[in-house]
Length: 268
Ligand SMILES: C[S@@+](CC[C@H](N)C(=O)[O-])C[C@H]1O[C@@H](n2cnc3c(N)ncnc32)[C@H](O)[C@@H]1O
View 1 (cartoon, rainbow, N blue to C red):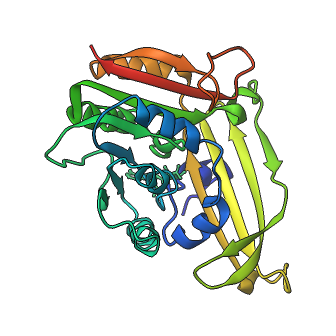
View 2 (cartoon, rainbow, N blue to C red):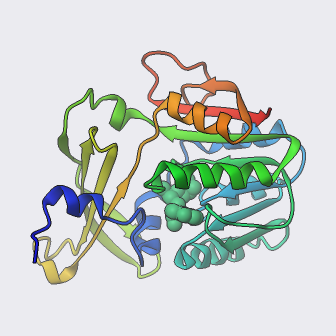
């Protein structure tokens, strides 16, 4: 049997790990930093919003609370279940639906004036052909005068400057609402510019036994950062043109120092 190198193993990681929903919610569910930006975009467009790769409804739920109508799709059944139960718990029954679907081949049979691919969604597609498929699906679901809104956190690869490196995240406690447990979170981010990968490693340990592997849940997955010019090219290939580029969640223009890449595109 041929040995698999560490690089090959990293390249072979999935774009999203299974059974991660509850712990993903514990890790990111309370992040609100970008939510006002999506609310602002929603105000500029009349009608229902498609939230691509909606996760646990972190963005969809505040949009519905603000009076918008949202359809969220995600291919992870655990995410969809959690998003649905969060919405129910908040008494949100109208104007919200979460559907299990893959962003590379979904067909909802309707169009939207606003499609959002926020929270870095497209980086989970590990091959540019898959990104093209997802963009093509979004264009198909976009009304003729609609907007396709994309938001990325670019700092990990912007700071990479061509160097392979492993960064340790600040260990912190997170709360799993599903089980009522506080967990010790440790993670690393491996930046691999040559192969255009950022590999995420997450560990959720029992704080009373922080080094006991039997009490630690581990998730690894690879992402594929998308460079700005590449994104513009892919949008163009799919019949979309970029009309606005922003560099932060306050929708200020992109500058050399910006750590976010946010684009609004429309049909050509
Ligand atoms: C970083 S999370 C972002 C979730 C949400 N947009 C947010 O901002 O909180 C990425 C999400 O993409 C979903 N995902 C990954 N690949 C997908 C695919 N091919 N089709 C649909 N969803 C996908 C994952 O299940 C996960 O919920």
